[in-house]
Length: 106
Image (cartoon, rainbow, N blue to C red; front, side, top):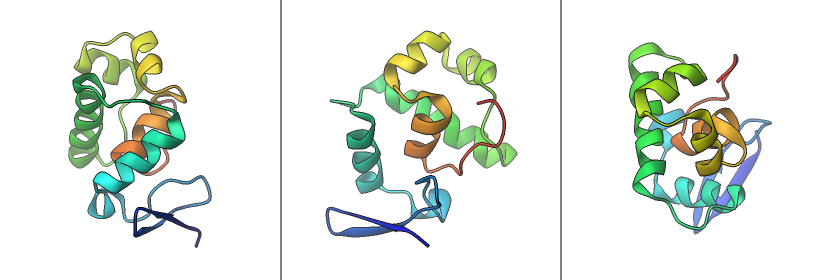
């Protein structure tokens, strides 16, 4: 299984770079690592709102929300979510939130 080392921590990841162990393995070092990979300069309250919504939805439903649900719950249009997470809600936001790689349209 591939690993990523960042700031003294080692993370097991899948072949697409998503955190193995999910939210149990999720920590601030992981967030910082993905932030760098995404080219995000600073995490804002808007970023954290998306991350929290993704994590809460996943805890309740076992899957990441569809894009329209994420947009509705956060109140952010899809364009805004892509501004926050340049690689998109599935690849960037879900990865940063510690969710597994989404299978459908996220």
